[in-house]
Image (cartoon, rainbow, N blue to C red; front, side, top):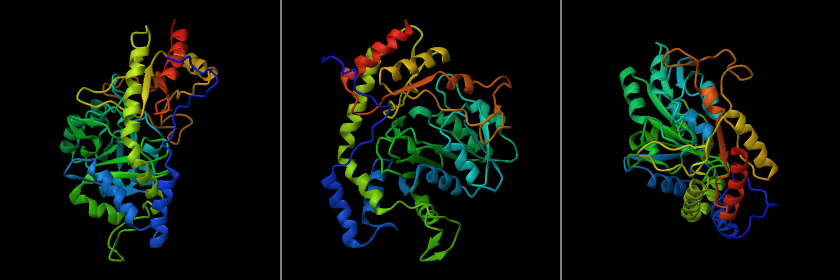
Length: 374
């Protein structure tokens, strides 16, 4: 193995870059058709390609962003304004913000100590007569306890939407993650494995796709507003970018899978360091590679990596409490004791995870990690 290049910056992420000739050819199609939005040919092709990646009973519908995907997935449930949606405090800001911008109230429930996903027992404790929906997050690409969430939703008559922004290409129990819940929202932001620069999509059952697609286009049917909606469409130029990247997706996924194996081999067995694992029966997350370690060590490792020109991501800030949009919100726990989410979130450090990370880079990263953990 070649010696590491200590001068090279290793970034936390690196978007797939489109072949410029291929992208120009697709964009030329949109220009020739003089059709740039409102479900043109490129939009339809990308939507169909994403649908083919889902279960046979399901359909993917493109949106202008991952946040819009969440809002529209909630809107599909026709939830009462001001009602409560139970979600996790350990996620990206968009999860709770989408609830609030939909005219709903986020209620934060604690996470499971092992998987860091929404705890079903905490969800049960958070349900009130005002609860209308549950919005769990497949955090770091680890599937939620989908069976427990489905049972809770059924028992209480709640709409169940998954935030699957971290979980592209993840499956559970032999099914793509989009198959679970009433709807699942994905992101196509440039930081994701497959992207359209900005964008997203929602997976629903095929019978719901027409209603969803009407809602993302102002609620129009044959040009007439027949229901509530807004402008949540993806443009032809964004679709062109996604279609341009599709032929390269398989090799990117293979590279990330190999990188995960290399990290496992290089970092496994280090005292005080835990490699964040996924749930049984789930495929590995290829969007994130997370370490878990004591918060003081995490802080030291984050700085040490940065000093070695290795950019890691040190945390997902808790979404409620002082200094957040919900300063007075508390985290509902299963037994009523202190919430686990703040301390568990402070353990997480995400390493660079993309197809441009080389074997030499992994060696360089492992040297830094071992030096801090000694």
